Structures are given as structure tokens and as C-alpha cells.
Image (cartoon, rainbow, N blue to C red):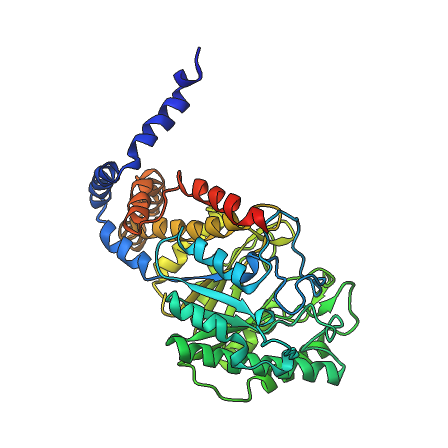
Length: 438
């Protein structure tokens, strides 16, 4: 019996027939008819998906190294595992990799950059508390050329002034250094937003905490509260820059106590009306952020999502289409608050081809959003209003066998990006011609 007689292989060969534009259109038309039976406007969903930007995290391309000291050790709970060949070693290589990633995904997007990716003139050396907008000029010029928005982050780790604590340090000299750094990044973010005509989200995350059980949990949080107040004392135009604060359950070296917990930042964001950052990998392994969205949006002006994939106690696996991601997308679509929710990716995997990790994450986020947009939500909510919970369950299950793949292929075709069966070949070619030569 030959391999090609197996049913699964025959099915794959049939799928291969649908690679032409003509066949994509034919299957898409049939899919639209099926969705129309449930009152779903597929074309409207595709148009909506195009308008939802995803912020690509630059640190996936170089394992969070940055340009200050690319070969230095990572500290402050940051750890990229693996040494797969092809890591970007320079701004040119990193931006080139991101450009290639963007050619593999449809839609209009953003790029998220950490302060440690600043670039200096020849012979210039500036510490983080003295960073200025001109040190991000190359990123701004590049983003403008590629029609990208930008987001930013102070880098409060991997630095001699980090001693296990930054903004929550009891040492006034250390604490003030990081306050000055954060203030500098806010000004840079405002300059980025003004230059690109799109608000730049400046997200604050600190790794401060204790490996073992602390005797005093309150004092570091009081210090952090005061430090944040100092960081935000300078009023900057929200038309150009948005302040965000990000919590974490634990970190490497801070397993027993993290100063910036969810409760701390939730309270701070509500009190001071800041953007609240929810990272999918920063909570208990069985805790998802999808259920938090409807509650948080009642009390904070906006939310920044850092979409990641937590696996047990590691928070930074490559994003894939799984139950957690679909649940996040479903809640976003059902709330329809995209003007108040910013979507960014946050993970780093150095054990596999970094381009594959990037492309997989962006496309997975888009797939989840499109899947959520194609649910029979009107039928589901109507059943719920009528207390027909059995019908709600039935419609929820019906969505799982609808021809979603045909619509996704149409999205890729319209955006002139490779289908799922094709993009890996292009990445492999890029790896052979570009990454392997590094």
C-alpha cells in the first residue's frame, strides 16, 4: 500500500488544490454562504480585522539583548533560553528581520521597543537616565517609512543600578536613577507619538521582589507608589503618549514576593486613571485574563494586553491558537472596545527560529480575533436574554465547525501574504540567505 492511499494524505492533497486565487475565492464564497445562514457578515469581519493593529515586540529578534551591551548577561528575572543560530546583532539586522515578519502578516501594525534598544552617535555613551528622543531617531524614521505605530518601555533590568530592586529600592540613589530613567522614557514616548501621529504607549514593568518570604511586604509597595507618583509628575499630552503599568505574579529571583502585583497596579491604575497592562503569562497557571477585561474596563480608561503563553511557571512561550487566546479574542470582540484596548505581543524564544516565533504569534492573534468575529454572537446573546441557555451552548458549539479556514485564506490572499501552507517555505529561504550568514 503506497503512502498516497492513506485518507489523511489524500485529504492533504485535496487541500493543496485550494492554493490558487481562483480556488480560494470559490471556497470563500461557499464559506460566506454558510456564515450568512447564521446572520454573520464575513466581509464586515475582514474589514474590522484589518483595522486592529498588533504591536510586535522587538526583543523576540535578539533575545532581549538590546544595543547597550549585546553580549552582556540578562538580570532582573529576564531569561531567554536557547541559542538557535541567527540572532539579530545590530539595529540594521533587527529592523530587517521585523520588516520580513511584516511581509508575512496582513494588516497594519506597530512595533514595541525597549529603552535598551536606543542608538548612539559614534563615540557617544549615555546612561539610561539621560536618554533623549534623538536616541530613538532611527527607530522613528524607520517606523514612519514603514507606516508603523510605535510603543515604548523603560528598561528597568539588566543594569548595574539594579540590585534586585529598581523603583521600589530602599536605596535612594538607586531609586532616583530609575525615576529619572522612567521620566526620560515618557518624554521619548511623547516624541515618538508626536512624530508618528499615533499615541505611543509607554509601559512600566519592574522585576523588584524577593526570592524568599519577606518580613515586610508593605514598605516596598509604599516606596513604589511614591516613585510612580514622581515618574508621572510631569504632565504630558495623552494625544501623544499613554502611561501604562504592568503587574506580575512572580519573577526569577522574586518567586515569593513581587512588589508590583496585580492588586497593586490595579489599585494604582484606577486611582490615577492610567492604562492597566494585563499580561497573559503573569498570573496563576489556571488564571486567564479574558475574564478580567470587562471588569477592568469599568474602572480604568484603557488596557494594554501583552499576549503571551504561560506554561506552568514560565510566562513567555510563543503565542499559539489555544483556548486561552481564543477566550481573550472572544471577550475583545464581544466588548467591542478596541479603541480602549491595545494589543501587543510579549514573549521570547531563542530555542527556535526567531522569525517563525514572531510570525506564528502575530498570525495566531489575528486568527483568534477573526474566529471570534465569525461567531453567531447575536444568536448566542439572544438565547441568553431569553434564558435559553441550551440554545446558547448549541450556537457556541456550532461555531467550532464553521468554515473558518476559508475566510482566513481569503484574508491572507487579499493582503498578499502567504497562506499557512506557504509562509514557512519563505522563512526557510530567509534563514538560508540571511540568518545563516550571521
